Image 1: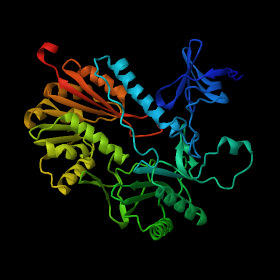
Image 2 (image 1 turned 135 degrees about the vertical axis):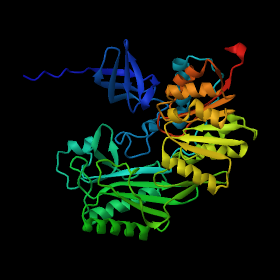
Image 3 (image 1 turned 45 degrees about the horizontal axis):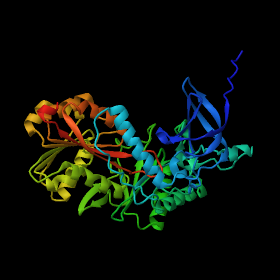
Image 4 (image 1 turned 180 degrees about the horizontal axis):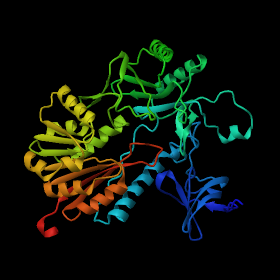
Length: 477
């Protein structure tokens, strides 16, 4: 006999009091912390508990008794369903206030180190259409909204072009308009969708691994260039003809596309790092520009997705580095060498290290394009490259700039940094929690001198943070 499912409680007239991690808000009911999405501090709501542990619960708002005076009206028709931009219900000035608070809480609670006064966060001038890259998925398994399910009818159209639903790997929400990227992105996506539907194209099924159209990537750039990459599961000559007919249709309607590309992908996943990219029309790259420097961006390249805020972020990092022209700089996790090339004019020499070999090749190209001759780049796992022998060979750096992934730095990398003993460390992070952990490990030899949060992603909980550390004097240790 099946076990009877435990009935979870309904919590009535609960006041939301604060913002929590991962875009959630929170309330306290007796001694229990309750995490709730899509609400803001000041809302008074009835909460249906969905998951309960000893000291906390996760719930959803099922009825609003009062709306918070700081609540904003979401501007996107897909808000609350697609899973992105969860903070649209918070005015932007409130968003950055909580991001500032998040940075400070992480550094103090996790890092437990002495901190200077944290500089006010640099907000993004653009809060809509700020991204330069988006990826959309083609699927024959459309996600039905609660309203559609309630109608209890059979839908003729179960294809979708849009975003994966969180927690449902094979379901895709059909997107009509996304506010993250320049509106040309919406027009291109919807044009492709309409053509595919009108001509009976098959869309990919993740479970059966069948269907022609898989994925669409669109990149815009600060130079006005535009890249479109279509990913297809081509298994017959007829499907290749279909794919190229769709590409020609897009090329005819959007002459502003400067790089129209395609990938034939018959694998089980959408990664293209090991696949050939074919040019249908135009170039195999676009350019980004920053302070007169040009950065080549290919379909596999990493580039910060908010171009304007990336410039502000890099300026902070450069200012913190305090370069005079005589310094040897190590740029760890250099990616395509954007920071390395950006600071090179004010350094004697910059050595960049990155895990992805293709990114290092891009970094070398970017130096060459800009006539920069004082950079060196190396590819490999950071903990394997940045060794004592490497440091002895290339010299002890005066400044280390590090911009690791969300997981932070490996302990071996931190040990190598401590051995290198630079005068200054500039730590750029997309995850203040792991940054705080690493700062604690560096604290015995380095003191935090400045902290500058930077908001790269409006309407989300994500925040970048730049920290300047300076080597302690012997009497400070």
